[in-house]
Amino acid sequence: ERYHVKKVIVKPGEKTATQVHHHRAEHWIVVSGTAKVRNGDKIFLISENESTFIPVGAPHSFENPGIIPLELIEVRTGSYLKEDDIVRIDEDGEGY
Image (tube, rainbow, N blue to C red; front, side, top):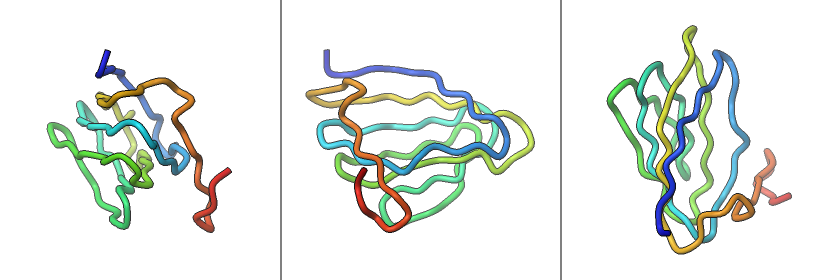
């Protein structure tokens, strides 16, 4: 009821849209490959067996800068976990 676990595979060179969630936090654990992560104001790399925590309300995205598929586990936690808790952010920081 208060968590959801999902496996995500990202091809080399692909990335997710920057987004914000108002009701859930996320934990990302890299299983294989390397992720370039945006978490709030910070941009950094995490590799196999490393993780990051995305707090509620933090703009976030990830991409695969490597040459092998990126595989990560996403654990959502919070009071509301459905897909419609997403606000996508454009390059100027505006929601859409």
